[in-house]
Image (tube, rainbow, N blue to C red):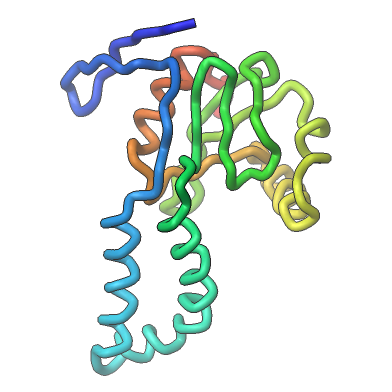
Length: 173
């Protein structure tokens, strides 16, 4: 099935082929963040202290950044079959298994939340670490299946427009 929809970004309408949209890591953004970390270590005063205190975190994040930079496949795929976010670790979620969608915000982080008809079916596919994160999300009242788009292109607004063209928005949030 081939769908062509018109969406609006910053007041300008644009056409988007909804057959398959891939969201990939933005290399300039990722390298920019890595460069900022290096500058913090070479700064002086409080900024340098913050840089050194963040070094253990940055070291572990470096592995993730390198994996994302050299990943050949897209991080998120939205197509006629459904939604695939490789970071969720649950495989493809077909459209018929998604009941609604919403944007969730915690602090300054925005996510797209997928509300599934049968959470347990997909929870059982996740790794033990991911299952723990799913339980925590549910205790906090969030969907266990949240997709982050920071560092991906196109971004969250485009992805949400595509999802809303197929799914209802979750009421009461």
